[in-house]
Length: 294
Ligand SMILES: NC(=O)c1ccc[n+]([C@@H]2O[C@H](COP(=O)([O-])OP(=O)(O)OC[C@H]3O[C@@H](n4cnc5c(N)ncnc54)[C@H](OP(=O)(O)O)[C@@H]3O)[C@@H](O)[C@H]2O)c1
Image (cartoon, rainbow, N blue to C red; front, side, top):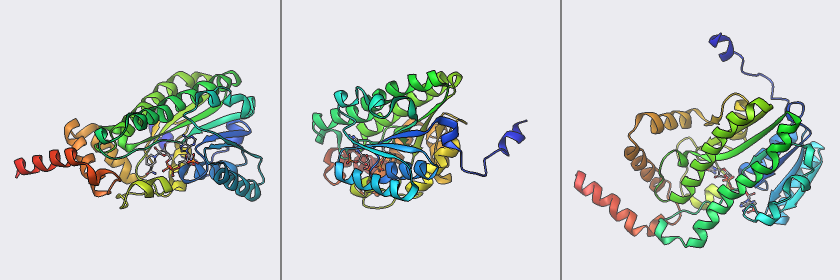
């Protein structure tokens, strides 16, 4: 029985329009992973409602996808951190037509925690946690009522454990993973699939802006999206990429927590994360440790 299930992986791309409904909402859709999500969904025939802050970039992406795939694309410029803008997101996105949603936008400040302003840290929670929570709370009831739907929350390997240099961001990504796991269980009886995508490094404008070197296992946005689509409805969490999946297992199940945090600290430094050059306190701590160890 177990063997049969393992052999059942779909050869054809999932029929998302038939499975979830005619339209998809992607929040954070103009570039990077969000644009890859929009493209993958449009290529499967879903109409799109796309959200991002910069209206012009969003309009370009929307026009390109409408032209290429012949689907309807509605561009809704807006900010995931703005509760009043989000209040009626489901209605503005076409209500009952939205059968699938991806919450992809994130704020990702890097550098030492104590060098970040409180506003920056608060904004990180507002976008990544509260914004995602609002979108989930807006779209899930309708999906449950209709008996079908899908929701993907974008998490990160950084959120598997403490992540020095990305401490607040990593904590919000842990929140999203745990939220998705709970929702996966709660929504399953209603026919709604919820999934956390725990991505490793992905080659996007956001990643290039914050890291100076490609981490091992860096993936293309399209590959991350395809791996996530394959996992939908099968489990609560997916870690795209074999190397990332192994790294995730080692960090979560084999290493003691403190050792996992040390590994993340080294990885973030090796990637040359923006802001860490000035991480005086944090660097001092790490080199002090090395000196003691040596
Ligand atoms: N890239 C990686 O290595 C990596 C790794 C693990 C997880 N992830 C996760 O994957 C997701 C996408 O990352 P990415 O690297 O593709 O990001 P990105 O290149 O920075 O793109 C982010 C997208 O979201 C939009 N956006 C940002 N803030 C927004 C807000 N407050 N409201 C609405 N839209 C907003 C941006 O457009 P505007 O600026 O115009 O709003 C853009 O379209 C994030 O959740 C991130 O945590 C990424």
